[in-house]
Each structure stands twice: as C-alpha cells, then as structure tokens.
Length: 272
Image 1 (cartoon, rainbow, N blue to C red):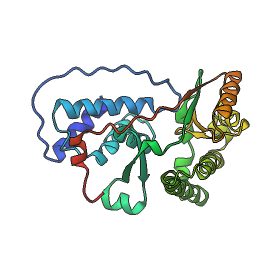
Image 2: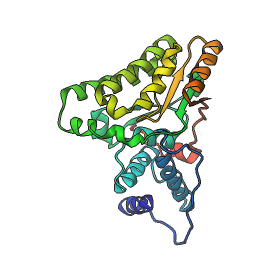
Image 3: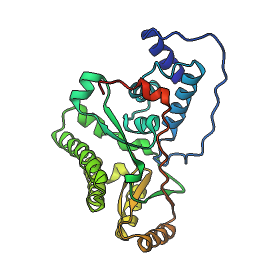
C-alpha cells in the first residue's frame, strides 16, 4: 500500500528506527461508498494507525504531521484531495483547523485545535442510496486556484473565515449564527463549483433540508449533507419525512470524542 511506502520514507528521513518483523494488513469498512464521507482516506488513516502501533513509534510521529502523510499516500494513487478530512480522522471529535499561509509556511502544516464535542447542537446526516462520485467536485476549482483566479481565492478566504467565526459561534453556543454560516458555506461552494460539477442529486439533498427550514451544507466535497434543525424535534420530523419522500437516508449525526491516546498528545509540537 502507498501508506506503507510513505510511512517508511518518513521514518527513514527522520531517523526513526523500525523494528524487524512482518505483518498482514487487511481492512473492512462500513462507511457508505462514494457518499462524500471520506471512506478511502479513513482506510488509509486506519492503516497508518496500525503501522504506528505495530512499530511502536506513535510517540515519534507527531500528530499534526499524520494528516500530511495520509494525503501523500493518496496523492501517490492519483487522488486529488485536501487535508481537512485527514485532520478530522487523525484527531477525531471536533477540530478547528487553521490553514493560513503563515502557519503552513512556518510549520509545514496547519494549526489543529480540538474542541469539546458538547458544543455542537444536534446534527443530521443525509446521503443518497445511489451516490454519485464525490471526487468530481474538485475538477476545475483546484486549477483555477493554482492559476490565481481572484474569485476562487476570495471565496476560499471567506470559507476559511467562516471556520473561524463558526468556532466562536460554537464556543458561545450561538446556534443562530451557526445556522447562517452553514448555509453560507454551501452557497459559496455552489458559486465556485457550479451546479454541473456539484451534481443535481447533491444539490437536491441540500434543497430538501432547506425546504423544511433546516441549515444544510456538504459534509465535505459532496455526496452527503449535514443538516441542523434549529426549531427542534418537530422540524427534525419534517426533515425525516422530506428525505424519505425524496429517497434519501437521514440519520442523527454521532460525533465521537477525540481518538488520540496519551502518547499521541505528548507528540503534539509545543510550537503548534
């Protein structure tokens, strides 16, 4: 696997000695396929965790570096993606991510700050039984970003600012603000990518949720939607009925606490 190669090279370049020994690596997953839920990177992340434990080097490979290792392995396979999903999978729980150029240039990675999952209101996951390919949504925007497209750059900067404002909204439990930010996030993505790239099915999931007054945005690149019903149980019931009528699956979103172990926390750099 690509992650084995990336892991070995990282350890070699950083003078991390690996014990001798063989292993068999296999996997199974219950993440819905092509539903925009980062199923492929979850497998790579799990494989990296296995390598860290097998070689007993978890304390030597810094937590904030691991998302980049996962992304490097996926890049070797020709998968175009970003760091966000990988950060969420490495840290678990609720994480604020700051990918400012200053931090990326200085540290080689973003600043990742775990947050209390109890700050979140009840959220709901919506996805289709017959999903589309979530990878298509990256097709043109990445190139336009690299080409210096001013609209794409300014829109991405606003998306980043939404994350910072959203962090404060969660800390203050200002869910009215969170509602607006979730909707704004999707609206920006729709303007950047366009309906043809996002796909009719993905857009319909958002519109079904918004049709009952819920806030809705993609969980990532598309394929699944996270919804927030600020009016409570009655609105949730309307959401469930609307999703059922449209052929979508809707489930309460379960956010698990951070998966980091004590030795992982020790490895977090003091400068981050």
